[in-house]
Image (cartoon, rainbow, N blue to C red; front, side, top):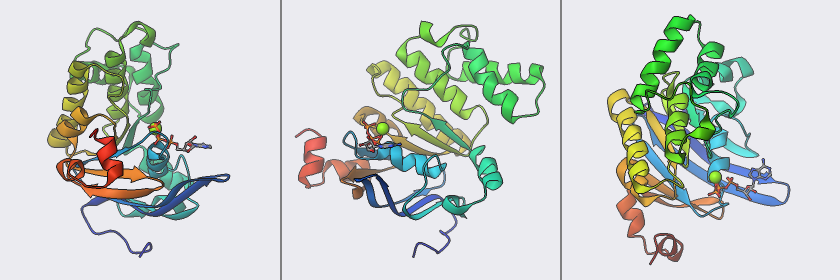
Length: 249
Ligand SMILES: Nc1ncnc2c1ncn2[C@@H]1O[C@H](COP(=O)(O)OP(=O)(O)OP(=O)(O)O)[C@@H](O)[C@H]1O
Ligand SMILES: [Mg+2]
């Protein structure tokens, strides 16, 4: 089963993924399909391997066992040069944002553009202006990340994750720690990426408000496996005590 190419329309397919760190068996047979142009929320308690799971999609980690497919290609066994090309089609919003503190916002964005595109400075600046306008922070190009609020930093990190116009966006807790207004703002941006640009999104989130706004489907990781998968409403109504506990009743 692992070896069959996923059908058209499946942007990401993770199959029977196992990953351990020493004696710690984090993922013990995770399978997940993400349909192109949809947003899937990955939920689960802290330390259950959500970040570990999505790092496999861009091969920041390699599986002990199982296969990872993106756009019908095996990421886990592809050559480095092919992988580097594929990575340009995938944006990654890291948990915590991972902006460079010593660079201004504009320099953070230009860092990506100047490394990965042939565009001259004038076109890069134009793209940076557009990206900042899109996240409603048009005046922040010369600000340093430390001078921004948490919500503003997330929006800048999101602008950076999509500045190369990826086809897939992987978001690791895009709204954690934000106030409800910022949660809505970031979640609405994700919805626009999906609906206006057709971007496929995987969003790790604990945040019900964000999941409600963004998720077409959701899956729930527990003890190294996906124990529930469906719409968010289906997960919220699931009788499994682990899910009951997570959703707070
Ligand atoms: N590179 C690594 N080396 C060793 N252990 C790791 C590594 N990356 C993750 N782990 C361990 O794997 C487990 C799962 O980590 P992961 O970051 O995926 O959790 P998570 O579900 O994202 O949690 P959180 O919701 O707190 O972000 C943790 O116990 C973590 O310490
Ligand atoms: Mg995590």
